[in-house]
Length: 138
Image (tube, rainbow, N blue to C red; front, side):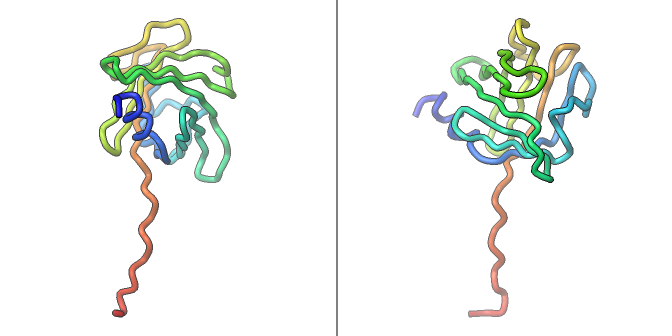
């Protein structure tokens, strides 16, 4: 399995956003996030939903895992950036995923800190709850 296949496979599933920075401001509201929002990756697409199920964002993406750091291009399907190609970089380490994205037409960011025009998101993998174990004995 090459780096692209490995990273694409590792992204699949549900991720919880645990941090957000926009334009150099931590936890800046942007209209496409919400406390505890869940991001569902499936193939080369993802959607973001609130805990109440409201759809906030749908995105198609292209990965280049050979770049250092990994390169990703977001293409939003809805919202103010719909149809725009947003250059980004990512780090994927086990159950942690971080990206930094720029506005369309800007250079791809490679440092994981925000300044005006950049957005950074931090996520942890959401694992399915384990079934309860009957402690009364067999």
